[in-house]
Amino acid sequence: MDLRDFISQWEQQGDLKRVTAEVDWDLEMSHIAKLVEEKDGPSLLFENIRGHAPGQKVIFGVFSNTRRLATILGRPSSMTMTELSYEWMKLSVGEVIRAEELETGPIFENILEGDDVDVFKIPSPRFYDKDGGRYVGTAVFHVVRDPETGEINLGTYRSQVLDSKTIGAQILKGKRGDRILQKYKKLGQKMPICTVVGCDPLLMLAGSAMVENANEYDVVGTLRGEPVKIVTEPLTGLPIPADAEWVLAGYVDGDDLREEGPFGEYTGYYTEELYHPVKKPAVNVERIYHRDDPVFMAASVGRPVNDNHMMLAFVRNATLWTELTKMGIPGIKSVYMPPEACGRFWAIVSVKQLYPGHADQVAAAVIASNTCTYGLKGLIIVDDDIAADDLPRVWWALATRYDVKRGTQIINRGRSTPLDPALDPSSKFITSRLVLDATIPFEWKEKPVEVKLSPEVLESIKARWSELGLD
Ligand SMILES: Cc1cc2nc3c(=O)[nH]c(=O)nc-3n(C[C@H](O)[C@H](O)[C@H](O)COP(=O)(O)O)c2cc1C
Ligand SMILES: [Mn+2]
Image (cartoon, rainbow, N blue to C red; front, side, top):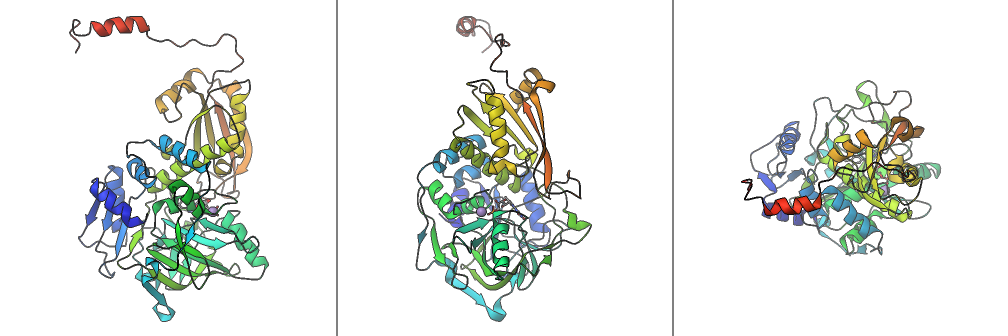
């Protein structure tokens, strides 16, 4: 599958609209996309971008609703995010399907090097008016290789256009990508890197997942049920998708950090660079590859709910569920990370309790998981009669099963993201966390008995419905 397969599929199901009128990359595209997204509209394929070569296209809204997330996972478009996450979990605990290397692919149709390397030829949007510049990487992933183990790692880090031959790569402290960069730095070497913009959207989703000790190409192969087709980028020797739309190849010099940002982020707030400059890793671009008539993939940011929150919620939901399953914790019924909470800061887990303390075990496991150790602030645990994504019933449990003193745990310290506007500016990497246990304690002998309609009476009045004149 490549991006173009999805474009055709969405067009057929009426879930994609081509915009042929000329639009500006500077604020206009992002603003149009945001308005359409807020009305749960189709994804938008902009085909005429001011100042860019005819044939160049930009797609927005790839991830912004569950219909399209379902198609990306190859499932019926009626499935909910929680159902899709369950499918992801089921597939990813199965046998791994490794990537398949091809000799060549459409990504090599156009190769720009030397003086022809000009990042401004790519139709990167500027999203919000206080942004530091154009962003080439919002629906992006970067490919690197661990210099010690040889393992390939994909990671999604926002990328600003810094100049015609440099883009930012905001690889935050402690991410797998950062740990790899630090190894190169220690070796006194620059880190070869490929930046992929536009491809099978599932690859981008995998790039944004907290995957340790696995190659995300293999994760996607396993989810797809067939190997991802890769080719080797000659300059860096790194594997890139054979049918990607745009790829930038070059290196990061860990000793040469550059100012980047600010950016109107997925939290709905601008980042700290609005107040003071922050230096970050940057990619020195030595080659640009693109397909004929390339499709640039962009993801909208800003206040929830949009592309970013749907991606974060879906991927974190799916990998949390996978981790809980792999940890062998019984009774997990459903998992949900609401996009409205930016897709990452709150989680809800429904569990069929089997022993005293089971809900506490679930809480400890969620907090220890790779998925939730980063950024989670709040966790709500509910009993199995309530689905994790049934928010009205979750509220009911908070109202009637949760006792503040018995059901609350505050965890003082945990890893977090400097993008969280609620964190003290002097301590941006550490958060506290809240656990709300809204289950009925397993060990209680006299449990609250739920009020239910009598089945016999229901049966009998069903037969009398016409007679009662209520049809
Ligand atoms: C749209 C989007 C943008 C992201 N931007 C960044 C970013 O700028 N920096 C960052 O460190 N993580 C960012 N993330 C989260 C990372 O992709 C995620 O932590 C992933 O695990 C990083 O890859 P790694 O674990 O291989 O380092 C973003 C996620 C999404 C969905
Ligand atoms: Mn990774």
